[in-house]
Image: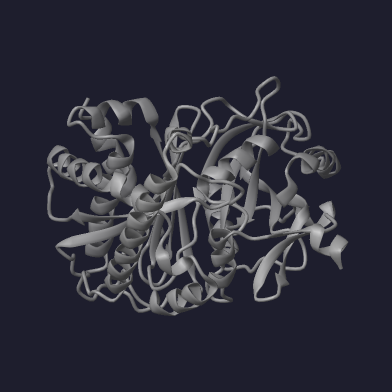
Amino acid sequence: MGSRAARRERLTAADASNIVIDAPDQVNAFLMAGVLAPGGPIGTEGEVDVAALRASFAGVIPSEPRLSQRVVPDGRRFAWAAAPVDLEAHVRLVAPVDGLAGFEALCARLMVTAMPTDRPLWEVLLVPGVARRRVGVVLRIHHAMADGLAAVRLVESLLRAPGVGATGPDGSTSSEHDAASTSADDRARRGARERMRTIASGIERTIAVFRPAVPHTVLLGRIGPRRGVAFVDAPLDALAAGAATVGATVNDALLAAVVAAAEAALRARGEPVPPVLPVSVPVALAARGRSGNAVGVMLVPLPTGEPDVAARLARIAALTRARKADARARGQFELTRTRLGTVLFRRFVRYQRLIVTFVTNVPGPRHPLALAGAPLERVWPVGAIQGNVRLGVAALSYDGMLRCGVHCDADALSAGVFGAALRHELDAVAALA
């Protein structure tokens, strides 16, 4: 029994909450969808040498433990346990699609396809037909394995340009070093104050879940099985320069574009536009430890009805400056720190009216990557939508571009309409420069 237990590693509370939240009608997985150019296992006409790709992944797996572990029950908790990796199941060639629109439709179907739990929680799909002489690639990951930042590091391990290594943060902070020189009494008093702040924050944020911050809107409701996905690109330097004219960041620019695109999509359906669209934005926490998930939640009430892009962007920048540090200080949402809390949270969020959209923006690799010698030309993240929130936007900076993946309930909004409006609004921010 001892050796069996030694081979297991209990999931952190944050990782375990992502197992509990998973449900047949709301698969808690996200994906990275990319386009590979000829090179290595990708032939000049777009043919795929799947055996060579599997051999490439086999070489990476020993250095990434989560790729060869699955989640198993461990009493009332969950643990990572070693599991055999069948690369024929994990790395597969699928049927061709009809261009980029067909690729988006495939990704939409994957967002409602459950991941097998009897093996490690990842897979790679090779997709012919995305573009002439190009092959699509989809890396699908369960959220228990990684959040956005951890996923980027995993992608850098799996897809790496020759001679370029993956990099990651050191993980230590100045406060850890300062604590060593602080007296035990001071640490005890500070710990007591922090616990009281945590309790107060937890009560406040738990009550907020039930607060009807927005009127009834088509953006909230039961999420159906028909999903829409759209990919949107914007030049990163131009976007940053445009945002900087009003003291804003690229993340502010994304939020400003998202709220305007949501207004356009609602008007296209003849739906009323609420005066404010509150969104949930994850912010990275300094202390990650061994967890695949280390994010706090920033709630940003995005104002609608502002046609002037500069004015809208400036207002949003002021909101995020005031809220980002607070979100990091509060850390992970309290209800997801225990299994019971996560079960309650999973039920509550199907009826909440606190937020209407998820928006996430993750810094990606600044250098171009390759999969076993096949250049990765483009890549888009697609995040899960959960609870009763029918719209989500994920963004990743990669090789000079901001790559956005829109994911929505297709019976509530048109991903195509939203995506076109998002592209227009991002271009409008870039034009400010």
